[in-house]
Length: 80
Image (cartoon, rainbow, N blue to C red):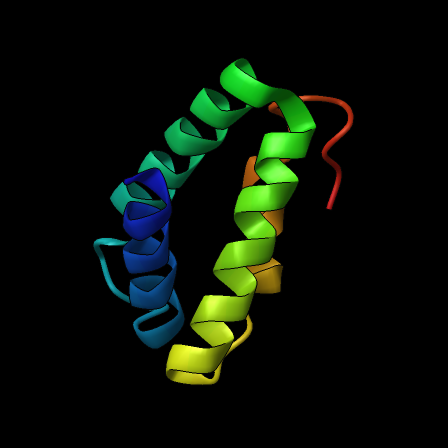
């Protein structure tokens, strides 16, 4: 469920980077990152992002790798 939400949020950002909705969507991405880190640590975050990158690249042809930095600060182990 979180994976689908993340895909929607990142896809929206990649397709509409100047939208006024971005700050709210980015906040939700951060909340999801915090949930993942609390539940499974950096491994859970890496696993989620690996799946997201592959699916978004396949679906819209854009790379969400630049959005990894949105989770910086959640844990010192995540630094992009």
